[in-house]
Amino acid sequence: MQGFLMNHLFYLALVIRITYSNHLISNTFCDFQQTLNKEEKGYSLFIKLTSSIFVYFNQNNFHMEHILSIFNTLTRKKELFVPLNPPFTGLYVCGPTVYGDPHLGHARPAITFDLLFRYLKNLGYKVRYVRNITDVGHLENDADAGEDKIAKKARIEQLEPMEIVQHYTERYHKAMDKLNVLSPSIEPRASGHIIEQQQMIQQILDNGFAYEKNGSVYFDVEKYNKSYSYGKLSGRILEDLMANTRELDGQGEKRNPFDFALWKKASPEHIMRWPSKWSDGFPGWHLECSVMSTRYLGEVFDIHGGGMDLLFPHHECEIAQSVAAQGKEAVRYWMHNNMITINGQKMGKSLGNFITLDELFNGTHKLLVQAYSPMTIRFFILQAHYRSTLDFSNEALQAAEKGMQRLLNAYASLDKITAADKTTVDMAGLRQKCFDAMSDDLNTPIVIAHLFDSVKTINSVAAGSGSLSKEDIDELRNVFSLFLFDILGLQAETNSSDNSKTLEEVVNLMLNLRMEAKSRKDFETSDKIRNELTKIGFEIKDKKDGFEWTLKV
Ligand SMILES: [Zn+2]
Image 1 (spheres, rainbow, N blue to C red):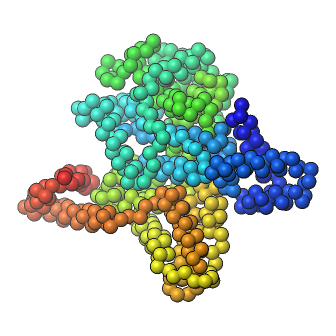
Image 2: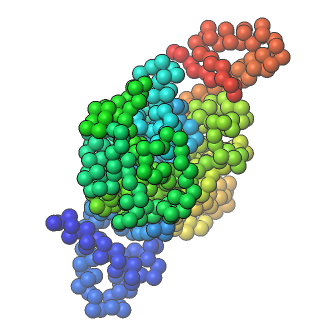
Image 3: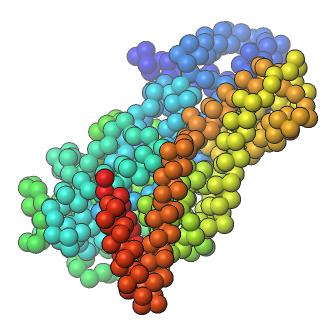
């Protein structure tokens, strides 16, 4: 009851603040209170009440002066973020299907929602961040056809599916560590929640929104659409979908082609299978996220994130499943990051522009002219707003590398500036401006632009024109540290990583010379390079697009 009351008082405080403050986000509550007292004396009780609420949240390290607004894909507008049970906040993000090396497509959602996770925590929210691992049920084809992606890889490599899962989960974690992406609070696996998934299927069946056919269970989209709206998240209309959908081979069990599988009966050769009352089989891919999000965050929770490529059908189906099972939507704010293109093209294995994160870090893909450090990749991604498209090119990455270095150099040069009695350069509220930009739907390009403005100031003072007081030097140091390291999540790349970068460059140089030797059929030289490197402890793998190497210590 107390939580319920506090939540409503919190919301009331927000509404009052928004209604009566013209420049609401930037001014402090005290300014606002004075304005209000002058103009609206009759509301003094309200003011006392809301003030005490603000004090309560401030005492709990809740930074009320920075009210976050985020773009909700569901309503297609920016909304104030008001958690259901402040200061607790639930965040669910669709994680990887672990059947291959992490690539650029994994980096953007991971970094976008890492930024949100860091910022929410910085504002004082207590965040439970759930990011799943898909280890079963993700078929090659979105229309419930084709092989399970993990089972297929296991078959090709002659391994257990769970060996594939373990291997690529570790590879994913290592890449995320390098990108300084924080671990989520919980990282559940689909295969660990089969019973809960079966329970949700039963609820949907009991509520009449699914049907069983030959041991498989399908969601009845048409029936659901009669009571609710299928397509509300992606803006699709079922009638249009029906007109544009072709009947696919092997979809004969479905009443309609856009119905989707909740449970699939396993074919005899399918290894990943669990017993159920319907058949020995496995859950449909969309189901795991509906189940695991509500399992750990409650029937209704705050934010669900993911890449825009998941908006339809994956997230649309998640909404339908939750509503069909529990009679209400689970998610209050849907957030989607935009996609990455490579030199203006969509990324795809068949286009030869599919770049794994390791290839980026080592510079071993034919499209790359050099290696790029994980922090360069992170900074590059944050230089664009998460809802904008982002195009990878060598030029853009090199510019990001230089830009990040300028920021880090300016931060380091603060230590060398001698404090003066007073400040003669314009500091103009850098901290507040950065908070305002972050609170405006995580506008990182604007935050970075403000920091660059200060770099000019710092550099001019370092060069002898103008001066900074000790307080202002400290303030700049604190703001840079807060935004660059804590919120944007950058790390200064240390000398040891400089050394390893140099090592990488030397090995890449040798291997490029080897490729050149091979191409002119000078096998004596190419074998010599390979053998010598192998002797030192390098393992070299030839690939279609180039090479891959690791150092075995
Ligand atoms: Zn998902």
